Image (tube, rainbow, N blue to C red):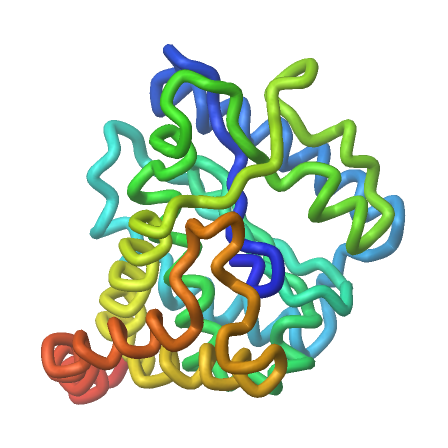
Length: 246
């Protein structure tokens, strides 16, 4: 979830099934990581990176339970050292989160879980396949890694010129918000943190936050209101998880 520029994902051409798309995405993910490592922006040891991975690992079993696609995901999280506030998920569960998001927003573990759960839901619902139907879709590509880290954007694609930069739709963003809140509650993270993430963004960016990118994304306040309406449903899940020691 790029809170500043809108969520992005790597997407397929028409006709790619889930297994093929996930396989292609895994190859691209490896290429991205290799470039990030060569630029020395792949963070494997900082306290922030350790926190992100700890939260991610706790969410994975619940994401697996929620997987209704035909294939099992091989979830993977890597952390990019960058001031940019961003996170993303590729098909099949290949994910990244940027240190700038956690550090600039002074995020709690619950808030980290809200962001990761949101991105996991994009992958689980295969939003990248739905985004523009059979058209060539948007990916994380140069606009994310090149802009934030200097990593060559040309590496990010399912082939030659197969990607273009597009946000998810407003409906897909709302689905990801809702699914992410459910995931974090089941893993024992406080769903109210999904609200505080957007409240922090309001303070950083102003009440509307400029997040209605291309008029497709809900505003910060719209998301806050929708998540608040979910709390009566998800807080009992969270409390049950906490009672079980999660």
